[in-house]
Amino acid sequence: MNVQIPEEYRPSEDEPFMNPRQQEYFRAKLLKWRNEILEDANQTIANLQEETVKEPDIADRASTESERALELRTRDRQRKLIGKIDAALRRINDGQYGYCDETGEPISLKRLEARPVATLSLEAQERHERREKSYRDD
Image (cartoon, rainbow, N blue to C red; front, side):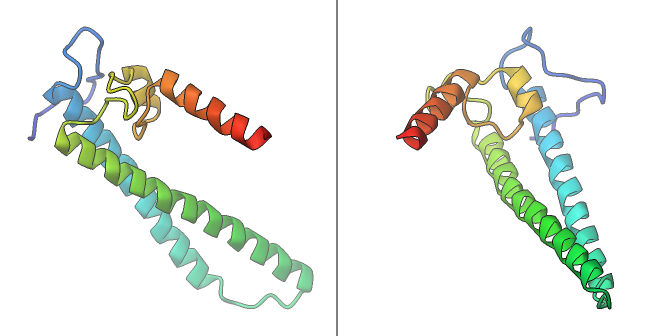
């Protein structure tokens, strides 16, 4: 479904939840985010290929290796995020996007705006985090 939405459009509580305009808005937002991550990843690969020159100084070499390790950890987190973005796009296609996996209730538009890959309402997420914390504390 390709619904044209104006660039200044923002989902509102005054309209039906997850109507075609809102779905298209979040689809575009997720695709843009995904493309930005992929562009960053391609830039990282290019930078790592350019930086294959060995540093003669051991301190410089250690610093370079440390920077590379940090960059690779960041890329790994972003790889996982792309999986979440792809899952969110599938939920849009399935008509399940914007609804809490735990309760089936709508996730607030504010939460989806801030975290478009959210699968839990704020309340369900807080319960989930409290349960995780109590298991960690045991």
